[in-house]
Amino acid sequence: MLLAEVVATSAAVAATRSRSAKATLLADLLRRTAADGAADVPTVTSYLAGALRQRRTGLGWRSLRDAPEPATTPTLTVSDVHETFEHLATLAGAGSQRARADATERLLARATADEQRWLRSIVTGEVRQGALDSLVQEGLAIAGGVPPASVRRAAMMAGSTVDVATAALSGSEEALAAFVVAVGRPVLPMLASTAPTIEAAMTKAGGGVCAIDTKLDGVRIQVHRSGDDVLVVTRSLDDVTSRHPEVVAAARALPCETVVLDGEVLALGPDGRPRPFQETASRAASMTGVELTPAFFDLLHLDGQDLVDAPTSTRLEALESVVPERHRVPRLMTADVAEAEAFAAQVLGLGHEGVVVKSLASPYAAGRRGATWVKVKPVHTLDLVVLAVERGSGRRSGWLSNLHLGARDGDGFVMLGKTFKGMTDEMLAWQTERFRDLQLDDDGYVVTVRPEQVVEIAFDGVQRSTRYPGGVALRFARVVRYRDDKTGAEADTIDAVRAHLAG
Image 1: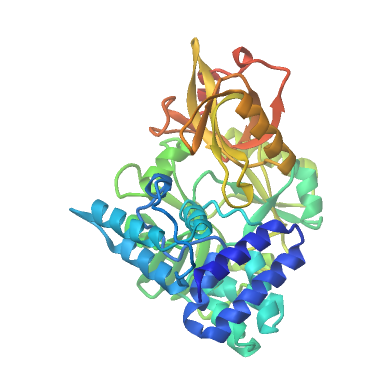
Image 2 (image 1 turned 120 degrees about the vertical axis):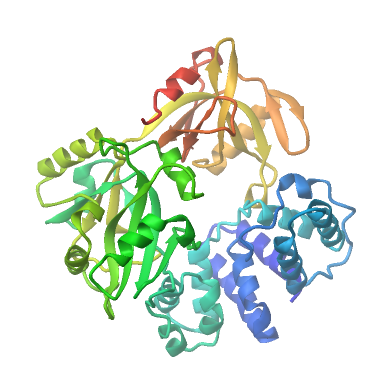
């Protein structure tokens, strides 16, 4: 299949707001891909979801910015592109940078102008077409003539939509049903929605007695054990077993033969309080630094029995039967809002993020963000200044999108992060015009602006960072609104930002 067909479908999907129309467009291309042969199905599925199949390629925006003259006729195939990125992923050591640049230039020289733009966007994770993994699953269901629920469940159990695409397009529900929980094969983690208050969260979760879990500021892990064999994976299902000997030891000590656990690891101080998230993240990424403690909050399989479809109450009973209290997330069972609020206040006082309210009747909805897990945590805001803004790509092409955020530092400003989250189309259009009026420089990608526009930013926390000059970075920053009632001189200071650092 020609890459041009994927690029054209991506553009068509971006051009419509209708979810059903998007799914139909995706289904049409997936159907044609299957008709051409199964070989391209996984790659096309991944590309339609806006992602490469390779975890790392060594490429960034600057690697693709200075592209050669584009081709006039589309000749690149999907397999050509996939094989090139597979090659780039293997390059390492002396001469690899030059080899990567040469291979990239050869690829771009064969691409048309539209294909070059699309390649830039997928490499940088900026395919803005309004089609996420869940929508691709709908497209697969339409193309294969199978229920969307069957595709979703198979993808959850396989840990990947790409891995079940061929089965979905075969039209066989039996082939999809063959994907079940298997010890040693990670499943997509269940996710939580949000609510502003404990009362709202308990109502959203269905009311009655709920589990009020401590929301730890740690790194999500999933643990599979079969005998002495232990697998530890991240939220994105990367194998990190070798980095977590503490988790492996804790799993092997459990009184069972096979188990699949969901939880987190975090760094704790001598007083039992959580250390700053940056310390946990740094240790989770390497074998150096503080010891990490596992804390589990769910159990999906125990000694041959799959519990994914069992109610939360059953899964928690199984969890308590094998995992000692020191390795379980602290929780409260209650139907009383005041009692739940008091518990949440205690959790925050201990330095944790907040709570997750859980329905006791719900199954484990792997890979989904529903109403049966609801997180409640304080939302912080800062008034910051826009220092620069990046050109958008994909659906945001033609707009200025990603904001460079700065705080006041003496007589100047210091950068402490970027965000493109929380922007409506109306906001994108407004800020594109606004920042062109404030433009100081434009290198073709980043537009530097006069530090005059104040924006209110919501964020979940502040962590130490060597990436930005201020030594800190915002976690999960998103735009709330622009503050035309404030000048840059009234923006928050870097000291105000640092006051949010934990620990």
